[in-house]
Amino acid sequence: MKLSSRQSRLGTETAFETLAKAKKLEAQGKNIVHLEIGEPDFDSPSYVIDAAKEALDQGFTHYGPSAGQPELRNAIAIHQGEFNGYSISPENVIVTPGGKPVMFFSLLALIEEGDEVIYPNPGFPIYESMINYSGGTPIPMKLEEAKDFNANIDDLKKLITDKTKMMIINSPNNPCGSVTTKDDLEQIAEIAIENNIIVLSDEIYKDMYYEGEHYSITKFNGMKERTIILDGFSKSYAMTGWRLGYGIFPDFLVEDITKLMTNSVSCTSVFSQMAAIAALEGSREFTINMMEKFKIRRDIIVNGLNSIEGVTCRTPLGAFYAFPNISGTGLSSSDFADIALNEYGVALLSGTAFGEYGDDYIRISFANSEENLLKAIDRLNDMIKKL
Image (tube, rainbow, N blue to C red; front, side):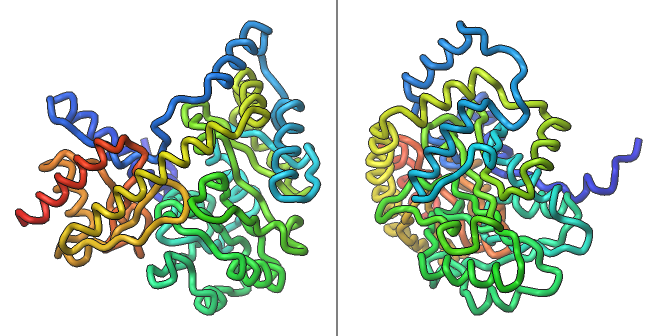
């Protein structure tokens, strides 16, 4: 049986493939330090878990509206409005099973054959995969190490053509841990308005800053009407397995994105949505405490990586990823990742898993214990010394 041609355009997320390989090695008795998967290693807040149990007891086990429970849409609108400093209508909020549907549905609703979509590279690999799958043409926006893994705005302007329909931005960034400056965001906003471009702003790490605070591109005049905000609960509240994301959509997209929800997944898990309300309305202490621990881990991993011959690592400003340059080791990023996993028991990702401009880099998730991070550094140091 022949598959459709579009299946050949579908990529993958290497983190899950590497995790599966690492688990297989563990089953064979090998000790593995997991630095590959991008999820907090903390349990979800107890008050969120209790809210889910209560919702189950109260009968929230049936279908709900495709766009999301009204109570949660309202809570998200209040949360985002307070965070960004402007009013948001619950009608513009659509709750999805994880953040990826916001990407996919937005591309399916907007992009046709021949449309160009600019996306960050190195960047989350599903951007490019979904652009290809939807029939669009992915245009990589190079993130420069010399600019702390941000785009050169002059180079970005050169990517714009009469076919450019959408631009994806992500700050704090996965995999680089970089943060787009307010000045750069303003220039990107001007480019979007001048060229009538829709912006998909992936703000899933908006609560995860080590210095400063988040600034959404939607705060610039004219951008709310052309920006889709992607956010969710996986990172800020350590709720990856709950599969809870949401998008804040301009008016013209709400009806069609809701139809895509109806046609694909019907609705997002209803009792989980009720628990998400507790996450938004609960104390921020959980996220604050988690970030304090991540900051300690960040310093351990950055200092450790910079102590390894041939490796240099900039200090990430957000999220929980380091993106060290390993070109000085003489290894390609894929060889580095393969040897680290199979011979030294450190699961990490090749920079090329995040796009063509990721070569010479690896991505490390430091969402692991201080003890394991130190163990990983020792193993990687040993690996390089024995090359």
